[in-house]
Amino acid sequence: MDSRSRSNQPASAEPAELEPLTEDRLGFDPLVVFREWFDHAVAQEVPEPTAMALGTVDEQGQPSVRMVLLKGYDEHGLVFYTNYESRKGRELERHPRAALTFFWPTLHRQIRVEGIVSRVSSEESDLYFASRDRGSRIGAWASAQSVVIRGRSELELRVQQAEARFAGQDDLPRPWYWGGYRLAPERWEFWQGRRSRLHDRMLYRRDRETWRRERLSP
Image 1 (tube, rainbow, N blue to C red):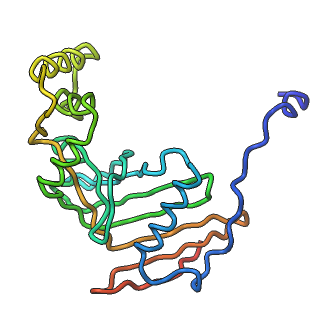
Image 2: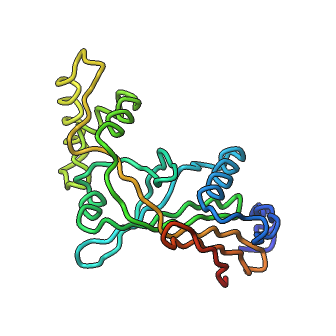
């Protein structure tokens, strides 16, 4: 590429640098910090603010990561939904520990969460399933998530079969193999980038009924 071509390339957008992440700006409750950061991401209209990378491991210790969506959070943990018989579902049933990462590059922030995972109640899963649009509910019945299929036509046939099964029925039941998981945090890390690469990293570790806050070296 010659110099003239290079000059026509758009400059990469650098996120605006935020104020340093200092101890006196943070309390000792990581949920409060998470709520502040999450609400800020939503207010700034970052793309897919609820998207989070979910890391699990299988019985051989092989890790796998995929993106899921945060569907709720409170003092008990962070909730997402999936097919219990998918790869992540099977891995969580065998090894109910996981890690989550939110990354908001336009804010130069990420949040890492680690903890124990358990299923949410049937009532909670039912309530959320009922809130989904009909196409998503049909999809939950049609897709045997993570199972090898012969082609797209097989999936489309399963959708047609599910549509026929529930024709004229608005209140689709939740499949027994589909529902929510809640990750109860034992560790939170709040990462705020610096142009110097001397990033701010604040770690919260569960210490019985309280949280221990520590700064990590970048």
